Length: 71
Image (cartoon, rainbow, N blue to C red; front, top):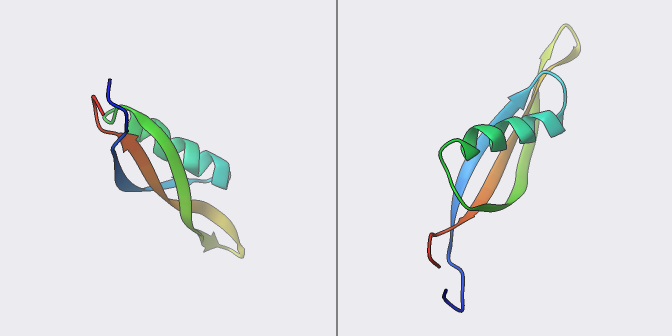
């Protein structure tokens, strides 16, 4: 075990027809299938698609920090 942690940042874009929260959770769930040691996220952008005057899709851009193994 070291006395520090080193992280890498990746950008993700998640979407949902239901909510911003679901868009975040969808992105993190997909990312977790291939990335280990995810520790935190930051929402950096929120947007959506409009159809017939209503929200059709919520979309969020996330920065996800994951710890480099053995750091």
